Image 1 (cartoon, rainbow, N blue to C red):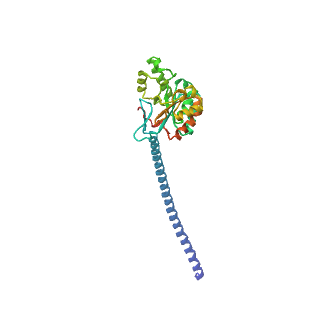
Image 2: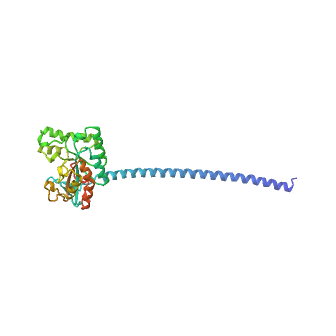
Image 3: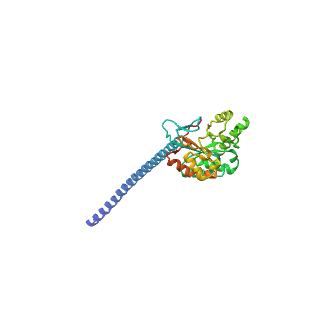
Length: 293
């Protein structure tokens, strides 16, 4: 016969073995459930990531469309055919002036563009084809355009249009548009004839090319007495040029200011911008001027 103590010992061993087996089964169930939970969590995270990526992609597309829409500004001004002044559309600000720079890009245009950029002001740069027929000139034009300034057509060789044949007039205008498009990827939207002298034929070509024709309301930097930065600054800001007979101010709302790529104009430009603003004039953004579609 087994002793009572031996029987008790054996029962304890059996109970221990059974308990261990039961614990193992529980651990397996727990581990299995844990694995299923982790799989579900991973799938949920993947779905969340996919949703976030999709939302981000949609958001990027929407942002791009908004940016493109913002770039397509509604016109707020138009150029008067009679006076070349800047006229407001509807309730646009009236007290504005337009800055334009002819004979670009020669020696000073790039620096003038940098001054305008620093002053947060815009201008139209009217280019001559002979300044952009080499790599250096083309690079200057590209930089000016990439800084955000519209490019206008000022003919290929700065010829007096009424003095040449209709065929030559056409070539003077079209050649610049072709070359500008080759460099910056778009054709000029504005045209200004040298000396402001157009013909019926040149007007037809400009219209066919979809450009806005404009002259100017005043400008003095091509007169000898104002080929000095200080004198020019005073004349442009006041609109008066007594040394050439302009005793009464030509400065008024919508003034279309003619300047050139010249050393003295370059030196005066920053102060001219400040002077207009101190008198309450805004420098109009040319991108807000109505063009021909």
